[in-house]
Length: 265
Image 1 (cartoon, helix red, strand yellow):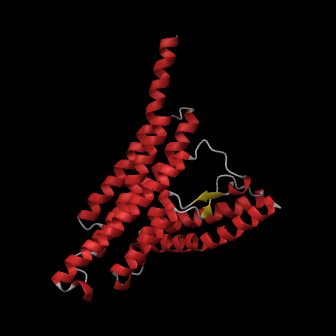
Image 2 (cartoon, rainbow, N blue to C red):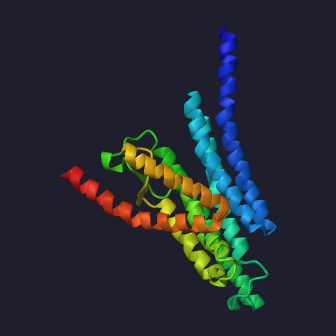
Image 3 (cartoon, rainbow, N blue to C red):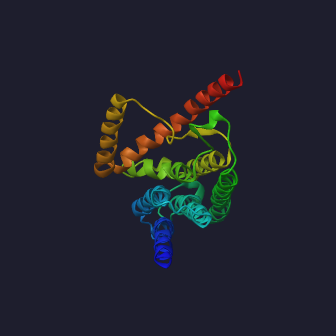
């Protein structure tokens, strides 16, 4: 009986790690799609990596098989899927040979620009690694109550999402506005997302937010609209969600400082 129970426990341990591996596979596949210029598919694979990254923790808690190995594996998957893949995608998209950006028309300037902008890719990757390392180091440390509704810095999936916003805007506008493809614009979003991931700026965390039954019905209908939008107008919907998330950052800072003052008072 004991031997059978041990086998069942070992089998259950596989499921959350398999979900994490699926997220990692989608993240790596996004790099492959970016290499071949399949920009929409590359974003889709990053989004799927985010979905599976959300599910692996849920599955582990549901089966009661959370482990240190799973947590470390999840961080490695996040680093590739949201630190490396989005930055690499933005680099290839911005430096694509079909772009008509005056600063890249001269071959010598182009080589220099490619070298400079590769540095932004490295910056985002290193910031994501630092964010994940800090998150792991703080798991067992109790934070003050005013951190309850906030993340410390932008989570890795949200950081990856912010870094590819210019590409999403470009797809949402029918690939007509090449200003989004300007290397300076891409570099700004890469640097911004990297700083936000590595920083200690409070950002929105929905885990501990409770709402009334009436409000839950409203939120449910909003979720239905978002799902319908992602199916029918995915790039426009993602653009709107990205703008809303950007607006939420200063709002979160305001309420965090308010809660912090009230707690210390």
